[in-house]
Image 1 (tube, rainbow, N blue to C red):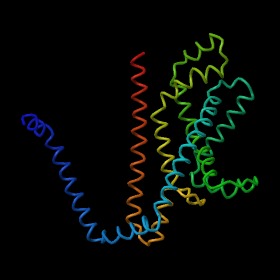
Image 2: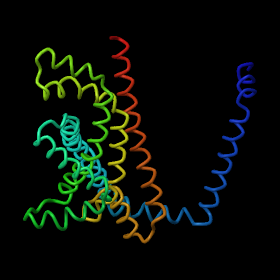
Image 3: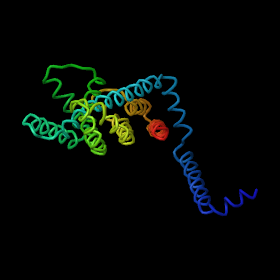
Image 4: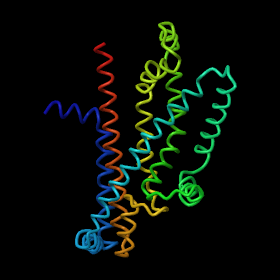
Length: 270
């Protein structure tokens, strides 16, 4: 009992704020429930979501969202790492300077245009011009991977620059070529430094998949949009959609924190 009294004496302001927020949320939910006829809207949503198999479309949307985000991140990691290595190489040779210029143009384009523009250009213009026909999800994976590669290249470049230059010099001193020194010595240390930022990039990809409906791919957003269009009721689907994105992001953030703790514990053991 004494501990409880000390706690309230120390945190009474925090308790009051939390209590006020809870009361405000209660009255807000109460007003929404009666003013917008929440019970009727929920019955309509339940009927279309369960009875008419709307949940199957949502399961497909969750699967496609994760496929696009995960595969896009993997492609982006490969492209971004290669670009970062090219851009940190000392430009002593003409070929290196040309490669750095090309990489600079690539990064400038994908960082300077919205992802939805890149998706529309790639799916409706570039792929047909090349005579390539791909499923919508596969096209989204490629375009999201190219977009992510531009951002990850800058993230990776910052991570490489954060590694002690003596690491590269030591690897070169024992006879390793520059490429092997970067890939086997510098890049692994850079990845450890940029892990939180990579987690943010993955979260960004999860949220950006909300636009893939522009090219006919079914994701979480498209699934709930179809649910609202079929039932002529958007309130419940959109609220659940927002909650689902919050849960996904929270799970990813927790996994990233777990990986950070594991790496930190390994460092302490060393």
